[in-house]
Amino acid sequence: MRCPSCQHTNSRVLESRSAESGQSIRRRRECLSCQHRFTTYERIEFVPITVIKRDGKRESFDRSKLVRGLIRACEKTGMATGQLEILAEEIEAELQGRSIREVTSSEIGELVLLHLRPLSEVAYVRFASVYRQFRGIRDFVDTLNHLQTPLNETESPETPPVNPPGVPDVSPTDAGDRETPASCATGS
Image (cartoon, rainbow, N blue to C red; front, top):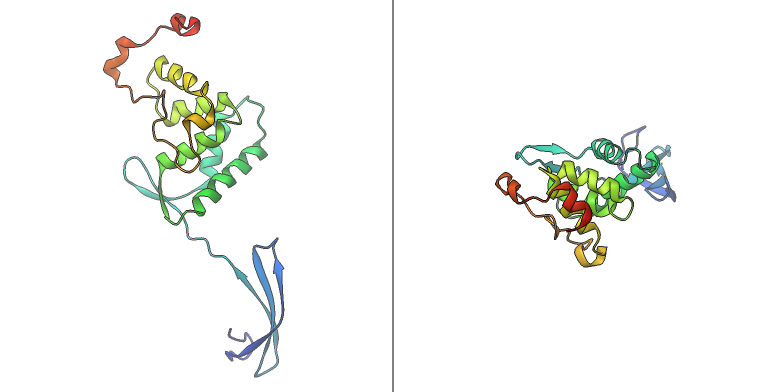
């Protein structure tokens, strides 16, 4: 460590302690040449996460975009903004914990769904409808049916599925096979 006073490179550590709630280490040092005392901090350097969008473009992960999407999906569900901020932090921490620094937007979407499901089924369906680009009522019905199966039977936190059971990739040509709203509501 270079002394800020004389630029000498040899110093000794006088005191070390945890700082910023354990996120860094504060060290008091003394230069062996001029006896100037100074403080240094050690912090973990987080390498930014790169998101690979559907069109192949790459951009830095932006937690505020994630929070905005969560707020939109959770409107009028009674979930507090603070709770959504914490949820975004948990998702970001999960991404930071991976050894791979690039993640697809699809992986982020599946992580969001995995975290939203136990909190709010309404928010889950809203987010899924935008993220999975629902084309019709059948997509909603399939997602609602998927929600009725227990979480441990359909999804694993380690490897969230790209298309969970009950949410098929339906093409517009299948529109004639879709159930009508009345038959969906009655289950017949």
